Image (tube, rainbow, N blue to C red):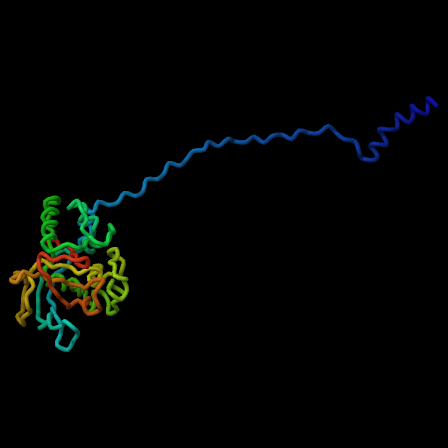
Length: 279
């Protein structure tokens, strides 16, 4: 009996092996070495610095080569107010610089220290300024820069709006389709828009039609049939030309040829201006 017990005890490992139930000592899994990443926050990138509006103004001046054109409305073109732009006559203007954009609120704020506009937006045209207010702005701007910024004459304005020597003969400044180039009553919901958001004209000038009316520097006077060179009439009745139409006007007011006027003290939220620069 004792021998039989011994034989059975010795046979146990073999039986267990045959049944596949031998359990090896558990292998402790090797811990993967983790690289502790230092949470390095990326330094927040500073927001791009807004360009200085005075320097931007200088960079945005476009040279307008001089030339000769027919200023005003031809006899066969009729619309409400067309009589103000008759008779059509031959005009010659010398070369000058004109800003690509209407004068913005951020530039006015920089020079004057305040923003008179009813509808606010840094890159929107400044408005609610009179012709006299604009003259004060120009005096301060020229003192600041040492340059000779000014308002364009009415003849310069129309020559540039028509595309100068690159004119394609469009009715509006840059197109025969007003919606291509102008913010006017038909597409604005009675608010002006940031400058330069429509298509430019042949000279790369934006918003010569629509957005805000633009004051000219000379006086408002009736047209004559006489040929003229660099006309700059005095404001005999105290009024100055307004050009280009605005966000509250209809189609015809935005024509390159259309003209109206206001006194030097009048201001409104659809009246602004664009700067010229003498050579």
